[in-house]
Image (tube, rainbow, N blue to C red):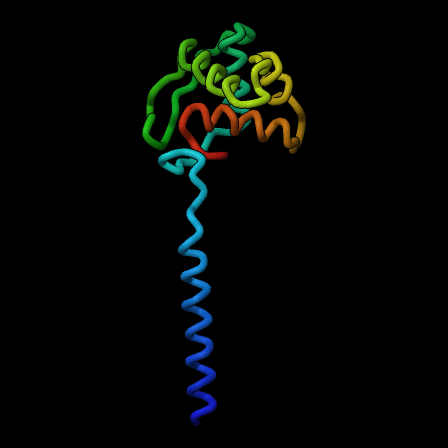
Length: 126
C-alpha cells in the first residue's frame, strides 16, 4: 500500500512539474491578439488589386480586432513598409511578394510571405 501511494504521489508530482514547465513558456506572440492570420490566397488577391492586375476589389478582414475593415491602397502600402523595415527585407516589393504567393502547392516562401503580411496587419500566422 505504501509503495502504491508513493508511486501515485510521484506521478502526481511529475504531472504538476510538467504543467508548471509549460506554463512558464510564454505562448507565441506573433500578434497582440493571437488571431489567426489570412491565407496566401487572401494576400495574393489583395496584392493583385494593389498592382492593378485584377478588376476585383480589396477584401475585408474577417474575425479579430479589424473585423469588417476593408483593405485600402494606403493599408497595403503600410504593410509593405513594415515588412521592408525588417532586417534583410529592404528590397522586398509587391511584385516579389506576388511571385512567391503564386507558387503552387506548399512552399516556405509562399507561407512566409503570407505570414509577413499577416504580421504587418497585426495578425498571427495563418
